[in-house]
Image (cartoon, rainbow, N blue to C red; front, side, top):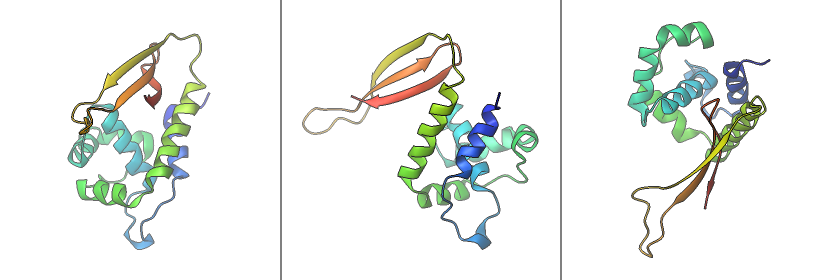
Length: 144
């Protein structure tokens, strides 16, 4: 069985890297893996991504081979440069690949209305989430 860490890194390796070759200190998959882990741990910004890397430095070094910690500016520049559609496709592929590993699980559905998304006409962003209870994993999301 493939390791979820390896699945994640392999998917992020396919993400086109828009950075100039001479400026690449950290691999794109390392930056994206840290960002994803930070987000899944409750982080919500570039400073949180850097803080997560500092807090988990030993674990990240041993599991993904992180050599040094990317700065919040590095995370910011990378997220400004990558293609949102390609990044979205990577996340969908990651969800699909991880979902293949889930068997015999209860799938819970949950809907939420996102705060501060109300438009002048009174409509707001509503999301429907499918959640794997056993694996504690979001299987999919849909704006409704």
